Amino acid sequence: MPAKSPSPVRTVTLPDGTVEMHFVVRVPPREMISSTMVFERDVQSATAKIGLALMEYGLAAFDTEGEILHGGGPRLTSKGQQSETYQTSFGALTIARPVYQPPSGGKTYVPLEDCARIIGLSTPLFASSIAAKYSESGGRAVQRDLREHHAREVSLTFIQALAAETAKVAMEREDRWTYTPVTPPEQAAVIALGYDGTCAQTCEEGWKQVMVGTMTLYDSGGEPLETLHLANAPEDGKATFLSRMDREVAALKTRYPDALSVGVSDGAADLCAELGRHCGQLILDFWHAAGYIVSASPAMTAATGPYGGLTAAQWIDKVLHRLKTEQGGAAKLLSGP
Image (tube, rainbow, N blue to C red):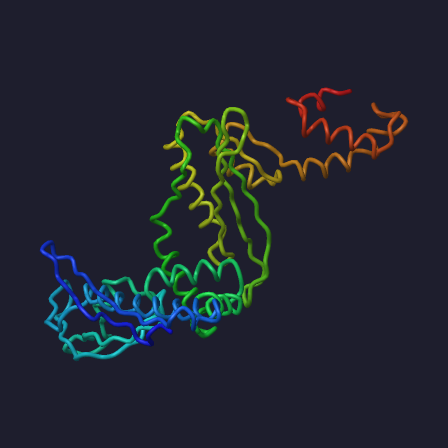
């Protein structure tokens, strides 16, 4: 079976400065391999340990050698080497690194964690992986996935804390970010903006509005090309969401200056006002339009109505089909039978 602790048996520095690290992994004779599952897990373990050795080498590039640090603040002196365990994509890695503190005391500073972009005692790639998995499923599902498919035993509290820390880092920088669409400028004929909101009850704060938005690009034939999504936590407030949307819409209009901008909403006055600042055309979404049509059906199909020969259900079916499938269907319906 693979060796328990693969380590570089030879390290060679080449003329261009790159380093070759040679590892040895012992495997059993083929006739002694009786289970593919067991052998594959052994291979996974061996390659993970090689990965840890490489990570230890790579992380050293972001550390100091304990020298005094001079920066914009007070001079920092090293308190010596202190060990810490960091979670990586290959496993937990315990390394000793210098820890610094100002002469007057106070908060310590670890250059390795700052320069290597360590997030919550995790390397950036592992933190990104956890955050992505956690956003799609619960913490226990992430824990099970790591155990069963990556041979990683990680506590639930660590997963939850790491996901929260990653989200915090993202939100701190979000106001400087914009989405970058992949659609070439010449392909986008329409920018469709969709705003919506609902109320959610939050602890100790009562009911607050949760906002969501979409930005969809269409070609000249009406086919969707891609959609960008934006949402806002209720505690951030509606104004924050609208400010973020303003920034994203401005970036889209810069990239697609010739595209027609249209706004889609449920018809709420505040949303129409916001969309009207960006769009030359406003559209009532089909779901809410259908609700108004259902409400109007008794009057439209009454004996004195323009469609007195139809039942309410027949008229609704006819009108919704026309509204959804016919070019200019809404204008035709408004003009009468």
